Image 1: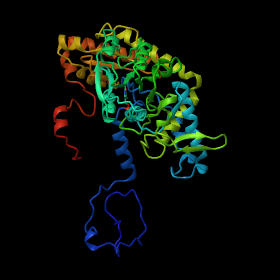
Image 2: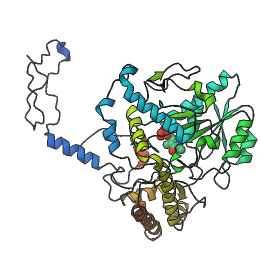
Image 3: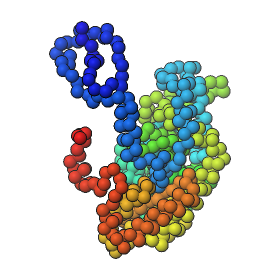
Length: 473
Ligand SMILES: *Cc1c(COP(=O)(O)O)cnc(C)c1O
């Protein structure tokens, strides 16, 4: 009798005693003949190996993470505990009767998100912001198809996140890009010049990706609605306005939120996330199914939505992300407004500290983030924004978002979030100022950065063209 686990000569971390495991039923050509050659390591060795790997990783628990547009705020650890509660660990196919607690949580989260957005109906299904955008644009498409209007174009400002045109295009629209004005906002005249009966919608982010509030948003929504078009709100920057205003008041018809940004659920490394989509009354019947409803006695999944675009994700979306977001909202209560207030204050504080050392293309009060540029350093010292970003890693700070938005050359987009205190902001400002001074005094040091990370300066072109993904000693 053969056993799958053979006694080996190396260190052992497991002790498998089930000698009765019989593999005779396997075709002999499929049975491994020799030793598999796995590393022979003890449990302690394995633990140390993984801890060492995790130490190579930069994360919010390790240092400041001012990644603009991503809202890398503190994710309260109690949320993890709540998301792992035994009662939430149920199969998504169980009957509604057996899932009342989970359904209640989703319903209450829906209500809370409707309250902060001002909208009328919502789906929690999409699993990311970009996924929400596509869901929203499919709703817009189906709406016009249903009412019998042929509208083929979607207007997108040049400051938009790349996912906006991608989502509109994938939903079957043609993209019309419009330029921003000298204040970094949508240029009304440019908008008027492309507005006609082909236009289905405009996709906007407010505050936009320059961290600037679109002051003419009401006029824009009036123009769009008079044209019979809809307005889509990219809610990735929602952290700037929570409790102060909302997309409904600004005139938007469809909104996505990024729960993994604004509502303190972890992200990075590709997910999981959640991108709920909220709509005004007239688009309610187009939402993906199911929507969670309450009949006064019972919570239930409603699959019966008249013009539904169908399902965009299996079951009800990334449920554990929803638990974390709901816990965060309950914990914050009315202080959600305070989070926005402090996020805006922190960004303005840092902007004022840095603007003497780096060019500030739009010198205006900012919202929760701001964009400076490394153009001066590039022209005067031959040091690029990428070099500056690498040098920040030596100071235990995650680099900000760089080279985005595309309309600012050598862009450095900084979003401190509300979770950081003055000391952290001061240290980061000092680090940025030290780097700016070093760019002229000793550019070689910045050009060769990082000097302290496990992997030094990498050859990015070769890494992209000839990726070597094997592990070798
Ligand atoms: C992050 C972001 C998105 C996309 O959201 P994901 O959740 O990453 O898919 C869209 N627009 C803006 C402005 C963003 O910052």
